[in-house]
Image 1 (cartoon, rainbow, N blue to C red):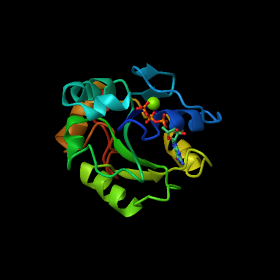
Image 2: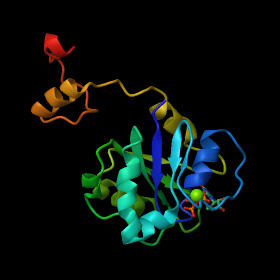
Image 3: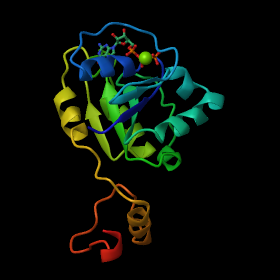
Image 4: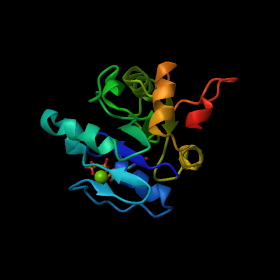
Length: 176
Ligand SMILES: Nc1nc2c(ncn2[C@@H]2O[C@H](COP(=O)(O)OP(=O)(O)OP(=O)(O)O)[C@@H](O)[C@H]2O)c(=O)[nH]1
Ligand SMILES: [Mg+2]
């Protein structure tokens, strides 16, 4: 399973998402510090809300296989600017929670996440578990291991470490 790093404002639903992914009933627990488990890293919303702590998010992201910006469908503005994926050296996905909120504006939040550079966006209701299966399917496989030399080779083709090799292209024999 891919290890998922969750960042987003307080009350976005990050901790609830970790509970839904584990099949637990939701129980409110304010996140006070970064919590690492086998499959997720859950950060307090205050990291995303403060310029000083925000830098810490980049550091924690290096411990994960995938980074997720979590935004509730009823958030009034985005904390993550356009192209903010440039500080993340991992695949970046968007997770929209609270799609059941009466104040939800899904197209607007989706646009923020696209502009931030998310390559996939998942719609989730943590209460009913709607959308959880699709996210679990995405996370199911381990990322394929890449050696330093293989990463360098991919970069020479203008690819990220985690991008698949184009069809017909193989690693040179000495680095396979
Ligand atoms: N209706 C609805 N409520 C949700 C959903 N996800 C979370 N909540 C509620 O939103 C509140 C905040 O959820 P948390 O998961 O604690 O939020 P968080 O992002 O971990 O917040 P911090 O720990 O402060 O960073 C809780 O009362 C949850 O029950 C959802 O998909 N739908
Ligand atoms: Mg939390």
